Amino acid sequence: MNIAVWLQRTAAAEGARPALYLGRDLVADYAGFHARAASVAGWLLAQGVSPGDRVGIFMNNCPDYLIALYAIWYAGAAAVPINAKLHGKEAEFILQNSGTGLLFTSPGLTEAVADTGAAVRCVDITGADYAAALQAEPVAGPACRAPGDLAWLFYTSGTTGRPKGVMITHRMLMTMAIAYFADVDQVSAADHALYAAPMSHGAGIYAIQHVLAGARHVCPASGGFDEAEIFGLAAHFGRVHMFAAPTMVTRMTAEAKRLGFKGDGLRTVVYAGGPMYAADIIEAVEHFGPVFVQVYGQGECPMAITALPRHDVQDRAHPRWRERLASVGRAQSVVEVRIGTPEGAFLPAGQHGEIMVRGDAVMPGYWDNPEATSKTLLNGWLMTGDMGVLDADGYLTLQDRSKDMIITGGSNVYPREVEEVLLLHPQVREVSVVGRPHADWGEEVVAFVVGDAPEAELDALCNSRIARFKRPKAYLRIDALPKNNYGKVLKTELRKMV
Image (cartoon, rainbow, N blue to C red):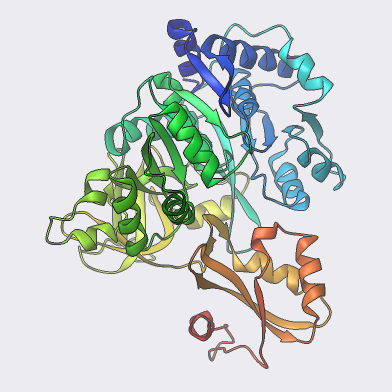
């Protein structure tokens, strides 16, 4: 079944219900949302897009993001959403690897792709092609798709520094949405999904259950995260749900205290994407009240590994409430979660090991990458690469990461991809990148450099090849990198140094 059938059903039953907003301005009701998606889908088919083809979205948050996404599904194609914060060269690799020939873009990002010379047709949502698409002959409804067909190709960097395409199927998205209702939160037609985090990631995936419920979808006029704007929209609309990285939650708390905003209109804030310090979530709950829910997932099992419901987040009576608050909750209903050895042998409760997940929300594999797939999927289990421990009550606590990933402001940075760029400078002999704790961003990127390359040149090199959020915030000169007897860099020692 095509996940987009849920939009068609909602439009048929409640077509006059408001659906898409830009700021406080209504853009379309559900009938209009459906009609625009159907027309753009008809236009895609007329351009030669066939079921199973990949169509990209490289856009800032806006209502047309959802129109493009559902149009791709209506046409039977698979969406390739690309983080709007990525550099054009990074987007180019994703486009080439996925075989994407047509890309929906927004102003600024159109030029970023064009400058790379990528062999892709850009359809700017402010241009003539998109205007024509909105007027095209609509399809009757979503194309028939099997549950295991590709719906969303999500690119997540790997330890090799090259992005891997996670194949997310229609079944996975439906499973995630059902688990959301069972384990995370309820959604009604009176609710508003507010998109302040990138729609290419969890925020966009969470549109699905809100479409099913007939809820409203609100994109801030700024196109991004602005605390005052969020507070104003929450107070205006009421019953607002939003997805937020932990750093967004801490920033919201600080700004709300400064402005005297108590959280009017905020109903649910789902936080995920990085470590949330206990002191920060305690402060947030004390200020905003019981609106917070934590989710743990990966692209390989999107938003669907564990959940810490609002009761546990706000509970202060249980004798172990602090330990539970430091956890990421218990397994969601649609998956099994175990702790195991690197070989996949199960470990008992209380023992540290690798987090393993199995269920219908887990990916079938990586796009065109059987080697990475075979390393990550072991006997039907997803080997997450994250390390943790399960207690006797089923609460999962993350302890560290096996892949050295840095999470800054909710965005993933893999050291290898930054290191490879820095090593292009002729005056860099060796380099190692680690995360340094940061009060606002969780972590910030720091590079240990062996060599005498000027910082300005290293900055310019990074800015020319990778997204700005991946650029090191400090370059620390070092005579030699600490290594073990096998020549492996000891990043644990470098982390101690920062």
